[in-house]
Length: 414
Image: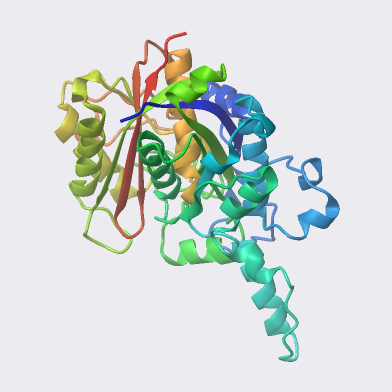
């Protein structure tokens, strides 16, 4: 099968609206959490989130276009524009029949859905819906709009696997490319769910942290005092390209994708298997796909959302696969970004690309007292980035419904 490389990345995140700004903030251990500004959260159990900051859609679109796109699509287009520029793609000189998009979102246009239903409910029952309501809301529209913007006529679709969504998209893109079904695929994910509907819903399911007096310290994976995840938003875009095609056009190669694993917990609607059964299978499948042994992985970007059960089950799976005395470095960048739901895998894949490119492991911040079960034998890279060689990085993402997606990237020689 063909080799697949990453030639461009782009990001819109709570830590910065470019991939470079995002990477610098990760290494510096910056928290993106702060009181919610998108709506008045005074009556909600959780009143903070990791919002995108300083994003003006008019920097990217005409005013007439802005009204056509939900924020999740706006974030997708902005991140993609950076990735396309980064990859030095000149579409006029490329075969756009063999360039496509595999994009994901866990929820899609939730702002639009909430707005339209609320306005209808407040009215007299007369249906006065925005003509762009459906096209703004549906999950696949970001993939469609990206292809329309650049005239990309290759394969085009959206993935949905809850919080594993954008890693699933990346694995799909990887598989299509190595099978020779395309030359270039733009892949990743976007989410814009910091609104009343999502915060209220996640509060009702007791998934969110309620540490309102200390937002910046609320996401604390592996810590004994963790009480839930911090909701985030944004997008991550990656340009995946068939290796020989990238060489022929002199593309900048950032890293190589070498393995992907998909599995399921088959256990519970929202909870993870106590022993991380699906997580173990997904990581094992990714290793087998890449032809690697566990000891060859240098860095794991853990799913680790800062929920009491989820973090524990993942580390049990990690210890089972890698062994109690592994030199594997583990960190949870959600301690800084919050949980971007369907976009989490994309920005965490970018974090892995930066780790293998720069030989630096971002920290897990806010964690002061590790669960006693894991206080020995696992290197959790707490509170300060670690500079060491990283040849292979593994990214874990899991979602409601038991979805598991694991991706491995490899250092590309300078």
